[in-house]
Length: 386
Image 1 (cartoon, rainbow, N blue to C red):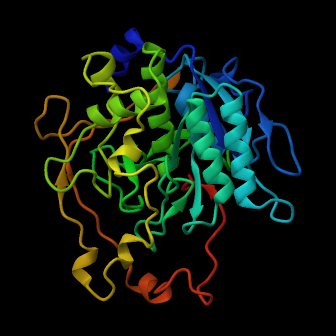
Image 2 (cartoon, rainbow, N blue to C red):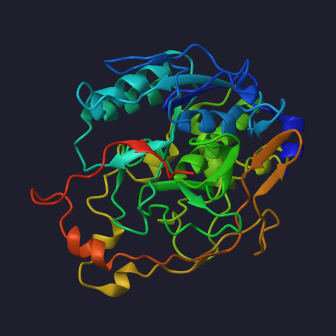
Image 3 (cartoon, one colour):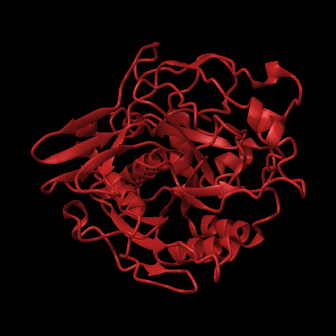
């Protein structure tokens, strides 16, 4: 991404990114002065800065962490974080109204970018309040990014809120640009970013650990949007998203959008430094327009179930992405860890994209994931652990 070149043009100043997560600890050095008031939208609320898990704090740092002392420097250190604690109590909160309140709060409190690094398996129609909130936020001018999910090597359920119409679903690649085996694949995946071996504060001990997940990839995509919006504050949410899709590292083989990386791996440098990308019409959502309707259809089943009994249906087509120069190659994840801050920047994408799935047992267990006899899916939760 050439972060140093990016930061000469934009650092995300003037853009508020809402982090809908487990809370954001504003006391860590890299986030001091970066975190706004925020709220807890649960029925048994705590402070927005209470983060018992550490997940939300790590996502906020990847987005807007400053190079102060020991910590993780985010990709958009000029942006501000609006913490929206959205961890429900199973005895008091249902996921649908909880997430609806969180999204509406973010949109009503100036968040141009809404980062949701949390997800849970869902079926069409089960989240009407959240769908309505997504539409509301888009009409207010926000962009919503959410992780596609981390069970791509298992059951590969469609995940909410990423699978909801209008939400930008984010997949994960590793530092070589190869799609991770656990990143969920589906027709709704729109963009991708680095999500493997990403540094962050350890959640169960002191110091720093590496973590994997579409959570981290989503944070990097959200930060990319903040950088672009800070440079072009007059653009609408539709225009920012369109240039991100247009300039992403796209597959050189296979179908676009790809079920693994969507329209490609984010490359904000192409917009900010190279001046590429056509923002297009201000009032047309590129994702919904690409779907050919005002609202895209929800995937009715995971890719692993699209052709039951046909093993060939589960073998992905190898794909490659182009690097900044347009040729095939490898541009890795740049991570500098020294006495000061750990600088984390997503890599541009360039490599053969191959996936191997271990689904035989899962398919037998979840032949019909939405049948009354199927095991209940896990609730909404953060991405893969450290």
